[in-house]
Length: 137
Image (cartoon, rainbow, N blue to C red):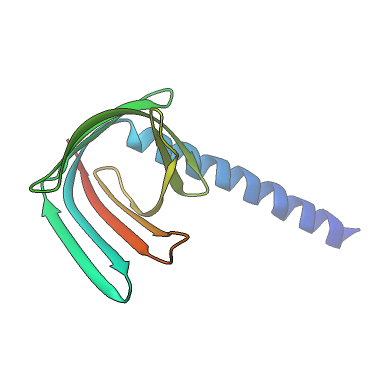
């Protein structure tokens, strides 16, 4: 009986810890974040094409799960878009209006600093990775 009680108590504690972690990340994200550094690679047919940019734009996260972004990567991307967002399992899921969701693993979660990472493998076998380093405005 003690063993079952211990397992139940441990499971409940884990569930509450997970929920509070997501709430902490959500609360920290609210506001405007500078994209201090963008690091990306695209690998196709064994060749890797790197891309690095600094001061690459902003993300603004509004309480309730909406936001907007302004991305400026000189020579390749200059776009503004609205999105919805949510936090699950220490990942942020951003869905641009009319597009498929994009999920970043949150590698660093501090009050004024975030580091996000994504790796996507396409059906063709091509691989795209993205790492964003952000600071709170």
